[in-house]
Each structure stands twice: as structure tokens, then as C-alpha cells.
Amino acid sequence: MNNEVRLQLQVLAYNIGNFLRTLALPDEIEHWSLITLREKLVKIGAKFVRHGRYVTFQFAEVAVPRRLFADILRLIDDLRPAPLPP
Image (cartoon, rainbow, N blue to C red; front, side, top):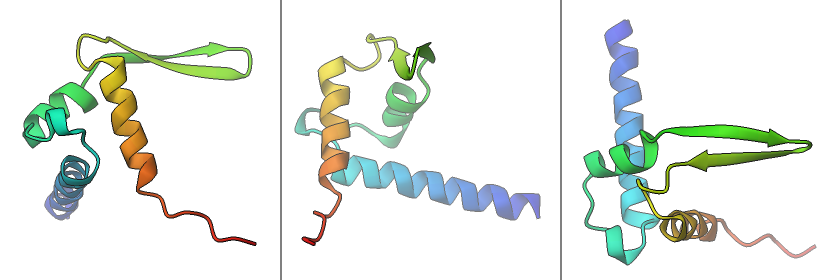
């Protein structure tokens, strides 16, 4: 049973990584492998900082520049369908 669950999680992680690589990466890094994506985008040191009602996600900018990370988030957001008019 453990092996089945582990395999399903690995397949899910691969599919999410492949989705990110094919649909939501800027042109300058679209050639990155899944291993590079994992090491630079997922396995980075980060922390949450709370200030009053706000929570900020901070990570080392040496892994991925802020502009590049913002471009990735924008491309992911652009994948959402437009809301239907009322």
C-alpha cells in the first residue's frame, strides 16, 4: 500500500512539474529540466513573516530573481479562465 501511494505522489509531482514547465514558464527558462525547476523553485530556503494582518513570503533571491518569480506567478494567473459576466 505504501508503494502505491508513493508512486501516485511521484506521478502527481511529475505532472505538476511538467505542467509548470510547459505552460507557465517565461521564455528565458523554458529549457530548464524538471530537476532544475525543483531545485530552484521548490527546494529553496524560505520563511513566512507576519506583520499584523499581512503575511509575507520571503526567500533568497539568489535562487530565482524576483522579476522572474513574478513572471511565473503572472503566467500561472493568466491560465485562469475569465469570470463569466453576471
